[in-house]
Image 1: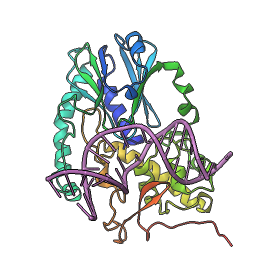
Image 2 (image 1 turned 90 degrees about the vertical axis):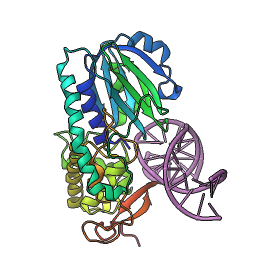
Image 3 (image 1 turned 90 degrees about the horizontal axis):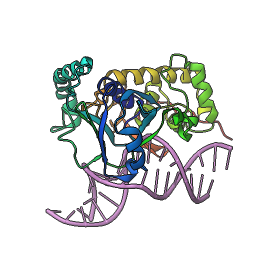
Image 4 (image 1 turned 180 degrees about the horizontal axis):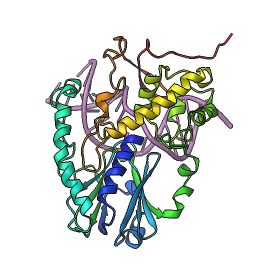
Length: 326
DNA sequence: CACTTGACCTGTCCGC
DNA sequence: TGCGGACAGGTCAAGT
């Protein structure tokens, strides 16, 4: 599921591939994936040149020369995959990136056919998860004059893409209420704890998942960071010692950064801008490891439900902090 | 007001 | 083998 590290990885890839390309044609076959597109696509997308790609929380923004942007949310199963080699040689960087990445894919194969194969079982895909595009999950196809195509695939059709004036993006409801970026330099432990205390009577996992408290954390990184900090996800925020919250802050940031370095987590669908799996799943300590031994204490990882989500924990390593009642 | 549940969707997996 | 149902989880809207 694309969370902060996955969306960041897509952003980094697209930023090496798209800037400078000019849109030639757009097709979309599922209205909800690109609502009210027709009129604006002609005016602001066809013929526009791509300037750059940004991310805020789990939202991607592709800025165009038309002063409009494509705003994209991948939700659960969305993918943005670039295929082809643009002939526009004045962006030599982009060409070398594609070539370089093709060679690097060998490394990905070696890594994912050793230890991880045992984890995922035989037959688990080790290379690109993407075949020929478009496929049946393709919702939007953007073709460039310079060559190459960008495919927006979304199996479950939860994701969306919309075109809007660049300077109005921050006015949409989500952007107005979304919390700070956890990896920002000036986001300190005390800021983190202050934000959590906005919902101090709730269980800590629900609060981590709340985008208005902290941006970009989803189910994977909530479970992983709570394990790393030794906090049971059902703990009530105000009952957790401050020292533990500081540790959670450090572990959350460490894990998000480590995941970005490893291209994010591919649970089922997620791929980067070139269609490749992410490698963080191999490093996950609890996520999707139910019934397997805890890597710290050898106890069994169990799966429970917290905040309406599947939640992976080690009961021995994660302490439950509850408010005393009598 | 704060929190929980349902809706949006499709593919996969499990049990009968 | 086929089929129904549960499940996966990001976000918004509706309900408690």
